[in-house]
Structures are given as C-alpha cells and as structure tokens.
Image (spheres, rainbow, N blue to C red):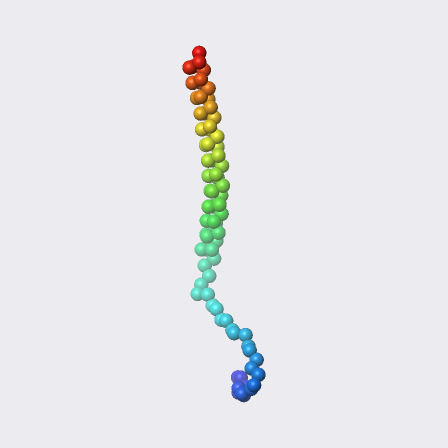
Length: 75
C-alpha cells in the first residue's frame, strides 16, 4: 500500500521501471546459431586456403607449359 500523494513544490524523479519478460528462451536455437557462425567462419578460412592452392597450381602449370613450348619451338 502506498501513502497518499501530497502536492509538493519539488518533485523527486523516480526511475522508470521496466518489466520485460521474454516470451521464451530457446537455448537450442541460440546454440545452433552459434554453431552455424563457427561453421561459416571455418568454411571461409578453408575456401581461402583452397583458392590459394588452386591458383598456385595453375601458375606452376602455366610455367611448365611455357617452358615446354619454348623448348619445342627453339629446337
């Protein structure tokens, strides 16, 4: 029970109360979201390394083919 409110010259401000109640907490969904973020991060790192390997192989093959063509045309 609150006391009756009397008029006053100086009003003290009370902090606003915030009563937030979430509807539900789905821990399984949050866990799956976190796992998905980790998988995406891992796959991006993996794809970067495979792209680097692929490009280095292509460069090596181009150099080898260039040297073979040079040897065949010069001799």
